Amino acid sequence: MALIDETHDPRRRSFVPSADGHSDFPIQNLPLGVFSLGAGEKRVGVAIGDEILDLRAAVGSGLFEGEALEAAKAADTPSLNAFLALGIQPRRALRRRLSAILSSGSAEESVARACLRPAADCQLHLPVRIGDYTDFYVGIHHATHVGKLFRPDNPLLPNYKHVPVGYHGRASSILPSGRAIHRPNGQTKAPNDEGPTFGPSRRLDYELELGIFVGPGNALGAPINIASAREHIGGYCLLNDWSARDIQAWEYQPLGPFLAKNFASTISPWIILPEALEPFRTAQAPRPEGDPRPLPYLFDDDDQRDGALAIEFQVLLSTQRFAAAELPPQRLALSHARHMYWTPAQMLAHHTSGGCNLNPGDLLGSGTISGPDLESAGSLLEATEGGQRPIRLASGEERHFLEDGDEIILRAYAHRAGFVSIGFGECRAKILPAPKDLLS
Image 1 (cartoon, rainbow, N blue to C red):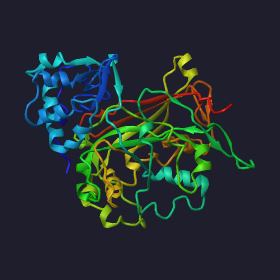
Image 2: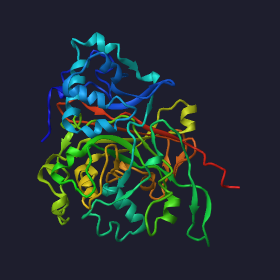
Image 3: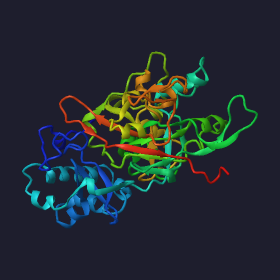
Image 4: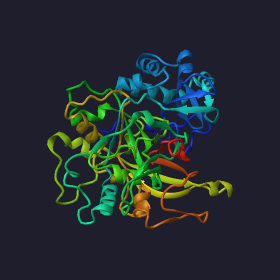
């Protein structure tokens, strides 16, 4: 059941002026991330409005005690892996203490103010050391749309509604929001060509995904039961799993994605704690009549009752011409987490069901989250129907796939009547030209 407490009170305000009404980081959110000031050392901070609370400075100022102090000390490193390993109770204690410290009328206001840093002056980094990354495929509309492009009569393969399909991605190329990426080179083969050629991808795409950080994890050979899987989720972020569709089309048989997806993935830099999302838990969307019931190891009544999340997603595009004309980014898609066919708990339980061990800070991706129509498509592959239907932009340009200089921005907001909405911060990256070293 959802754990609602005083930290979710919509009447609670912060003494940080920018926090009240902030689109992403009101006092009801309080996500954790890793930042640095200039060339200074990396340290953990808490987002509050347009400020960042320096957690090390707050610990040194004596603002924590007991379980909250234990959690804050675990977070006093250049990454949040040790903090995620602690699990629910220390994490919840720290969040409640942070909420009290940063609230209007706090007795510690003057001390806490000295620990605040302007977010605009800070550089944000990856919040954890990501040891492993697994990408799932739980957006059923995405799977159906893409399947129709290649198998019009049989878009979903027989296993899709029985098992949360996934593959192991590349953790080393996961980047924080704001880092530009290079268009990848690779082998591609046009349908009528005799053989493949090597060069820059011409069908570069984004994928709108929800990222899930593993909390305590499990030992090798000790699967996580679906009923307790939620206890092993340490937080959430936004994920753009960049994809080179032309490279993917040539390489993916018989073993699936490889170079088409390992060149870069971008995540938002703040870990949205599960406790902040408690008010936005909702029932998993009912399966259509005739769909199979999940096998027992993937089914839990509580998870079906409130294991899904009420999160709205946006995809925006800015081009070089947009920037020159000072145009705001154009929204390409509006989607929702209710389109996930499997819950985060089901993904985690399935991942460990064969005995695989997950470690604190490992990242799971949801796969592309698309809605039923083109306006809610989480990728250009769907929105342009495989490149056949260009998107017309406010700048007068068209896009079949992404061009050099384009910048993709992902945003997400959790909404529920009676509660203050919270956001994830931006997940953005600009596309640079492909390296030329291998082309001569």
